[in-house]
Image 1 (cartoon, helix red, strand yellow):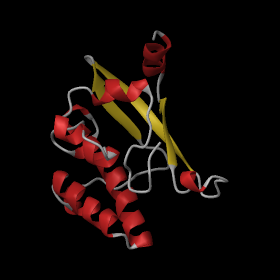
Image 2 (cartoon, helix red, strand yellow):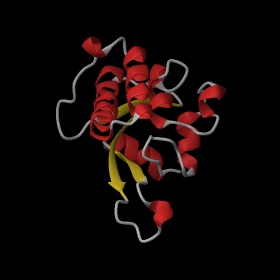
Image 3 (tube, one colour):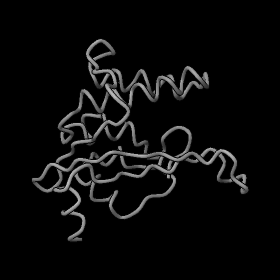
Length: 148
């Protein structure tokens, strides 16, 4: 579960496996998933389609910055654009579903994500939280997780 800025509020054990090997300073709370994905000391070196995935994340953060006028969103967009070599080198989103191709234990796993936003939560503490779920995008990834 993420807050409005992409900071992890709660996560399951699978996240620990995905974040293994990331620079310790990136894993100090609050852990921002966009930063840890695209930072050179984070997951970036293991993401096989970094230009596409990075472009997708940059598009999301930039759109949120434009919509909210939030300083943290603008700063994060500028930061991750720098990791990707600037906005001119980023692959724009090409369709409604973008897969994340990530190396884990010598295999490439492919996921697509879905996101649900709690915008009318009955508990005010849940207002604005995002539930991000990664699902297997192919049979190889699905079989790997079925064995666990």
